[in-house]
Length: 309
Ligand SMILES: O=C(O)CCC(=O)C(=O)O
Ligand SMILES: [Fe+2]
Image (cartoon, rainbow, N blue to C red):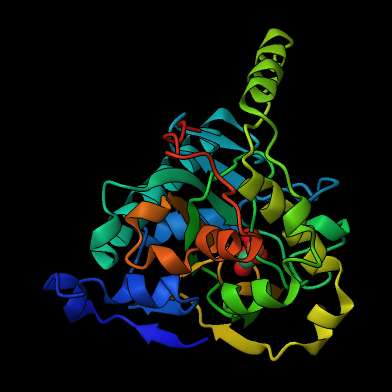
């Protein structure tokens, strides 16, 4: 894992080209210039001052751009709820604009996923194993299958006093070579198209959303859990510690780079899903790596378009 720095001059002059994408796809972290992703300091102060109920699962606050909706927040008044929506949507817009300038090859090709605000201290969070982010893992979302797409995330932290501390290792290819078969790659099944259509129809009839998972999604979900529960991986890997300063902005593919967060409070993040064919090096995308190891396709061909969330 390397850190790849993109300067303000490179961004402003539009000369980043494919370099940041290449670094990201290979499992590196791209560090961006400190760049206010907020209109004004008052918006940051508003987020820092939000009093979140420590609900059972300490849910992060999510902003869903397609629906222009915030979920997971415990606001006290309608005014506070409106302000939160405005601040989160402003963050999301600026984060997406920055992403497009740092990764020109992806612009217009990604699917915009959620943004989130993470107001809880990460150290000592009491969560069930699958949700513990202090254990090293690669990301997979149970409710939003990517169908082979990559999970690209832009983070920033607004805590003025304290670093956010991660451990990282990887890249994906090394992890997959070592653990994918043990984690059941050859046994994974996406289910037949007819079966999935029937499940989706039944789901709609009873008002629930049945995620249409490909074999790839199925495997990645299992791999996420497998890695979190694997003692050898948790303790034996050459992990590197990364300290992110207050106001720092960084990006990585969290399905390529194995990561965990050890401590830190008050971060925000915007996620986009990048289809493998939009990548600069599609042959090192996790879906390609896994298909090589499995010896059979893990997504239907041609890959269908992603549905808006
Ligand atoms: O909040 C962070 O710093 C990263 C946590 C994480 O691993 C995740 O959200 O997938
Ligand atoms: Fe993660």
